[in-house]
Amino acid sequence: MQRRKFIQNLSLVSAATAVPSILHAETAKKKKNFSIAFISDIHIKKLDTAEAGMAKALQTINRMEKQPDFIINGGDSIMDALAATKEKTQTQWDLFNKIMQAENKLPLKYCLGNHDIWGWQLKEDVKADPLYGKAWWLQQTGYASTYYSFDHRNWHFIVLDSVQENNGGYIALLDNEQFAWLETDLENNKEKFICIISHIPIISFCSAMFAKDMMPNGDWKLSRALLHTDAKKIKDLFKKYPGVKCCLSGHIHLQDEVTYLGISYFCNGAVSGNWWGGPFQDFAPAYALFDFYNDGTVERTMVEY
Ligand SMILES: [Zn+2]
Image (cartoon, rainbow, N blue to C red; front, top):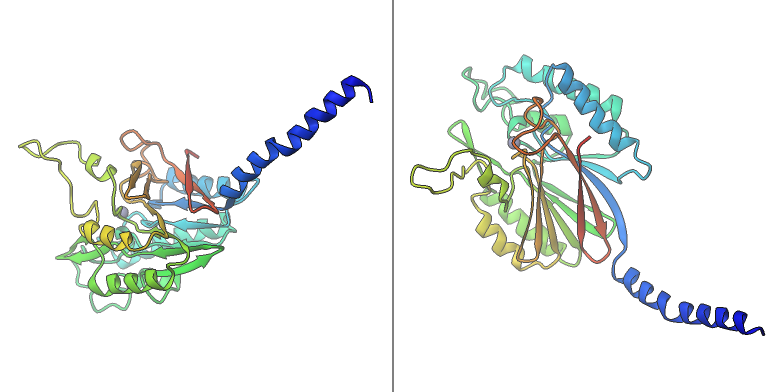
């Protein structure tokens, strides 16, 4: 064997033994399992910009070379049903469904947003209507409950209902029944990696940045409608389940990523940005792509479509 060839072979041997083993260790540690898209706060309404924007967001997701396994709609699909008449609410859902059917071929999971709830702030009394409140959203989605969970590959997804009625307004929290359900669902799935979805953030800094002003004494202005008021209770529950890895939310139209006690909390902006008037504060209209890894880590890419 010529000396040059021997050295080449030698280097190949060392490359085969040393380098790949490190790479192998790396890949064994972390490998992408799948991706999902998280679209939130579409707030669709009869407006050219809104209709084109929702279509474009869905087109960019559906035309990706490597498509996400499914889409999570983080809530506030329509502009508003809280204070809208039945006719106006119907018009908005019809528009939402028309664009969704035309532009999306991927599986879609829904999370309930406050603006998806019909009639809580309507002057006319529609409480007797079978579609009142969250019933309309249940009809729209075909779900039996406003909160539910499902498995995808080696992950368990829990979709919560953040929005509880309070004298026509709402407070961000889980009612007792839902909290008990969450405890049971976590216990039943504690061997899996878990991703939590809530329309309103459980833990977030965005919620504090939403209002431009501080309180007169300099305290932060932090509405009970912008951050889960039961965050401490939920945080204590999550501490018992190391499988809980990430929590995804919308609602604020701002973006942040907060790691707290080993869990990544992502607030994911809004497809509608400033309700279809451009960026909201520092954030352009956007949706999120999430990569889920076999080691339980999750990475987000925001896409300004
Ligand atoms: Zn909202």
